[in-house]
Amino acid sequence: DAGVIQSPRHEVTEMGQEVTLRCKPISGHNSLFWYRQTMMRGLELLIYFNNNVPIDDSGMPEDRFSAKMPNASFSTLKIQPSEPRDSAVYFCASSGQVPGELFFGEGSRLTVL
Amino acid sequence: AQSVTQLDSHVSVSEGTPVLLRCNYSSSYSPSLFWYVQHPNKGLQLLLKYTSAATLVKGINGFEAEFKKSETSFHLTKPSAHMSDAAEYFCVVSNTGFQKLVFGTGTRLLVSP
Image (cartoon, chains in turn green, orange):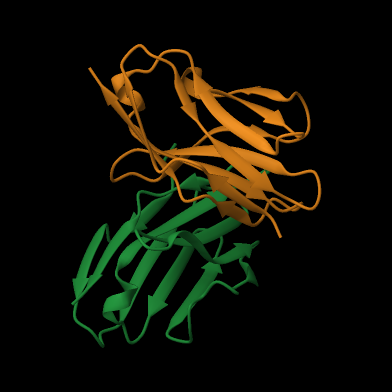
C-alpha cells in the first residue's frame, strides 16, 4: 500500500510568493496532521484534522498560514505571503485506529529566499 | 502539560555495542510514551509505544524501552548496534486522546564501524 504522499518534495521560492504544499493520507485513516521541522525549533505540530474537520490549529504560526482538508484523501497547507523564516521541512502524517501511531510522509523541504 | 526531555543531543557507539538513548518525561497523569526514528531525508517511523500495559516494551529492529514511573524515564535500548541504526530518535508523549503528540528535541545516533 502507498504511504502518505506529499508534494512537492522540494520547493524554492522568493519572499512574498504563495506556497501550497499537498498531502494525500493513507486510505482509511481519519486523522491528518501537519508538522514543521527546523533545526532551531525541532518538530512542531501546526494543525490536525479529524474526519476532515480542523480540531486544533493553535500551532499555526500566524494568519499567513492556512490549511484545508476538502475530503478524506487530500489536504493542503498554504503560506501566503511566504517569508524566509518559513524555510523548513513540512511533514504531513496520518493515523487510523492505533492510538499514537502516526505515518509520516517524506516531507516537503521549503526554502524561501 | 506534558513534555519530554532527551538528555543527549548526540550519542556515538561502535557497531556491535549497546545503545542507550535517554528520555525523561513530565506529565500530570499516566502518560502514553513513544519512540520514533527518522532516517536522513525521510519521515518519522514509530519504533515502539507504551500505553500503561507492560512496562518493558519491545519495538521493531531489536529496540526496547522500559517505563520507570519512579524515575519518570523511558529510555530506549538495543543490545547491539548496527550501521543501519544511525538516525535521529525522538521520544514522544501524548495527551489522553492521542491526538497531540509532543516531540522531544531528538537524539542523533552515530554508529561507527
